[in-house]
Length: 243
Image 1 (tube, rainbow, N blue to C red):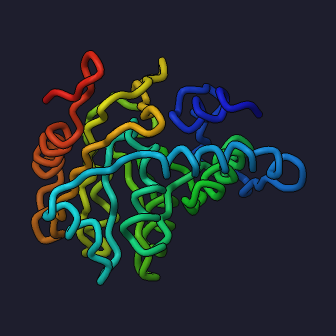
Image 2 (image 1 turned 90 degrees about the vertical axis):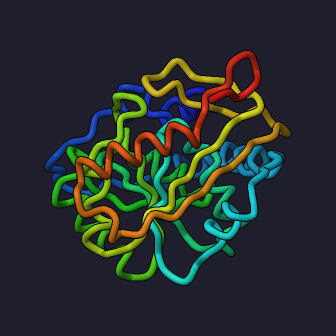
C-alpha cells in the first residue's frame, strides 16, 4: 500500500474505503507483513506533523488542554490530518478514538490510525446507527475522548449532520470544536477536498468547548455548530487563509 493510496483512504476518497457495510459479519484486522508495511508511512506522518508550527489564542489553548472530562472532538473531515499532533502536544498523551468500519478495508485504516496515534472503534458509521453509537458511548463512559467528523464519511462537505450530536448528548459530555486555518496546504481531489498542510508550514488552530446542556434541539444545534465550524476553518485561497 503506497503513500498516495493511504492518503486518499485517510481522506475518504478511495472507493474501497468508502464502502462501509451496515451489518458486518465480523471485525477484520490487519496483521503480519501488511501491518508492518504501513510502518514507514506512519513514521513519515508523525515527522510531518511535528514539523508544523501550530498557533492558537490563550482561550483556545485553555479549551484544548482541559482534560478533566472526556470530550467529543468535532471537526470537518478534511481537517483530520492534524488531529493526532494536537493530541500529542496539548492533551498530555490522552488517546482519541475514531470510528472505523469493521470491514477488511477498514482494517487498513485502523492500522494506519494506530501508527499516527489515533485509536479505532470498529463499527458501521451508516447514519451513525445503533452499532456506532453504542461503541462510541462505551468509549466516552470509560473516560476517553472521541473524534467526530459531522460531514463524514462521505459528505456533503461542510454539512453538519445532526446525528453527530447523539453520543455527546447521551453521555452528557461537551463537544470541543476544532478548526484550523492553513497558511498553505495541498488539497486532494476527494469529495471533501482533504487538506495536507505543507511540512514546516504554519497553522492557526481554533478550539471552543460547547456544553452538552446547550444541545437540546438537535437540528437547531447542528445549524449553529455548522456556522461556527465554518468560521473556524477557512479554506486557503492563493496560499493564504481567508474567511
